[in-house]
Image (cartoon, rainbow, N blue to C red):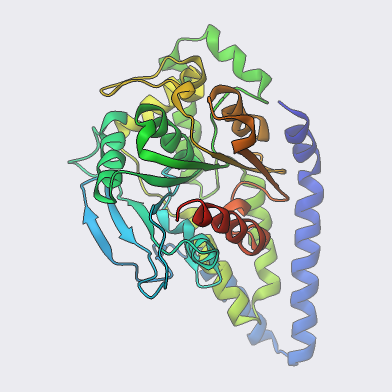
Length: 374
């Protein structure tokens, strides 16, 4: 357990207490202004409970057309057809595929990483939209996912800028290592590369059979999702529920919170075979940085990556501590001058939906990628 996690655990009771006080005090203030009656309070509590139990599926904020489909994913065209000078090299965005919907990159009109990248000048922009696992795809492997990515790159002309978030980041890094000539630049955001960095307790996994460790992690994941909390940060989920009290009289902000909550709680299964491989070979075995990942296209050697690399990390990220992302710089062959590190004052999801990241980081980063792609 690292220092950041220790502080977060110690602060949990204070976070929950502050959220409860803020939520209730804001709500009580609105009651006074509204001159509310007991029946109004009952209606508000019913509305709050309805929000907490809402299980509507999340949706893309914009109707990006589907350019190509596979059983595992869809390729969405997020380009700007009216751009006066489109880039020569397109950009492919890889959202996380860790049990949630790909629309995290386009959650709402004002919380959209896709829009932020477009505003920075990326007019030839595409995004993979991972499909939920089904009977046909439940046995899909790492090779199947890499094959989809390789085919998408080929459809886009054979050379792209890859931008991957979280799980999408390490998948992008694997593709760049296997097919370095197809990647013009590589951007990873909150993406674990060294899965044991900043987690001293992870070393204990080496003394337990991989299948046993993976089974324990699977059980924890399933139990957390069953009870409607994020397995990586359940305290934040309770905190957000308490803060909703203060939004009951603000329809716009409440609607935005509902959109976010739908994404948080929506369970989109990933193929069982892929999930088991991830747990055994990355979370437990840490095979990526060990050079022990073998695919149908050959071994994954991160040293094969020589293109410009942009590393984005969250200063308060409890899901993927900064050291896990920074490890990429130690394993690629990219010259030091072509590696940039962007340290954001945010947690894990804040890298993708946080206002600071969307207004400051992603447009600026996109402008640099676009200028390098003319």
